[in-house]
Image (cartoon, rainbow, N blue to C red; front, top):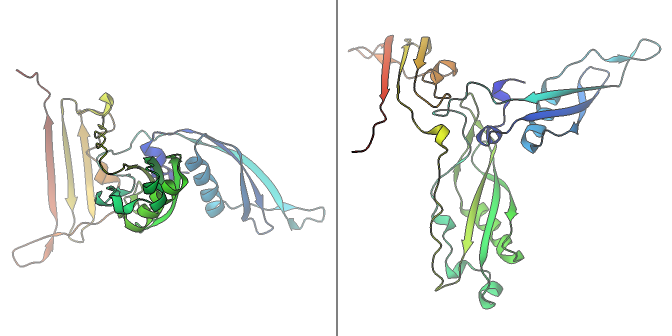
Length: 275
């Protein structure tokens, strides 16, 4: 496993743990089955363990009494630990919702029986978003206690919600999951106050300076890249672009011919008392 294998949603939630797994190895040395023998406590980390083992692991097969390749077993553990370098200003990130108008519930949206019986409630759902941004699944995390309202919530999200896909550590689209809440309120009921988003103090900007310098070659590749920072939080990484395998549109001269250019950026953060 590498940093790029860390599930994006697990990184967002800062989940760590150790996953035990066991595999069945065929006579050709390839994994034919993988099971989790001890959970990390995170289904995302456990699923990523078997997914990567089945895709990548290769073995010298077991041998029978005649020395011929045969089916064998293998077990091990993977420790998932948050990488020291996680560029919060860049990648990875979870699915990004495109607009929230779909989540506004109108009287016409209510299941007819719920409206007739004057039932309402809040539903928290979790959506599985594919690498193309389409919704592939929905499950209820916190029920409204009314089955028809819960079902309507997943149906509404699956048909109307739009997402940009999650991005992995390399900035490539990947599957992800996102949770959201729908508030089914009867006509005439006061709207619930918005839920404030509180950013942990550990992520607040801290005074300091950063610099980044790199060359954009004539073919758009990034070379000779370096950066440093004294800006908090610790995960602030001005050299995030240095670790991405990407190309940029190159600079051009007055004749429109691609040319190499050196780029240097400098950032200063000041935190001051309010007078």
